[in-house]
Amino acid sequence: MNKITLVIISLWVSFSGYAQHDKGLSFGLKGGVQINSAILPDVTLNENVNAVLSGDDVIKGNPQLADFKLNFKTGVFAKYEDGFGFTMFEVNYTPTKIYKEFKFNAGTELFPDITYSKIDESYAYLDLALSYNVYVYKNIFFSLGASPSFLLSYSGNIAPQKSDLRIFTGFGVKLNDAVAITTRAELGINEVYKDSYIHHIMIPISVAINL
Image (cartoon, rainbow, N blue to C red; front, side, top):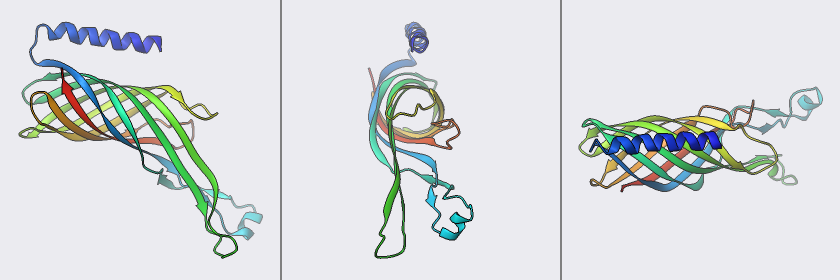
């Protein structure tokens, strides 16, 4: 974490120094709620007993979504207005969760739905997000950006990948010179666990306040 901290401090000092000479640059706080999910391989029990006895796979995979869970996201930002829109650099603390129960239906009254597997893991990341936001109509803006993210902590016994790269797009509304409301969809490019085909999905809804 030392190298990450040095990068953050260096970038922040650079922005601060530039802000003294340019009125287009401002700083602020950002925070709000976040909807969490993930892309998972669809784990489905093979109910054909004869096929299983013949050597067929018990578990087969197709993409599906994890359950949607509510969390939060908070951080600080530096913003530079250029007339057409603004560039924003953010440092965010992002906790997230992946939860999914896998069930099968035996198809009889004697054997009801049975949970045979469950993913229930929590994570926390430090995100360095960079985006460009262009005004499309009055105070409404469209956002496009990317965010390298560094793992801070996790639950469970299996260690996730230490970093992730997320791409995101969204929109926001500038209420006045000091306050804006934003929402966006973020997709993790890297797998959460190596060779797992699991990718984070995050939908933060935030309030940005200029200081």
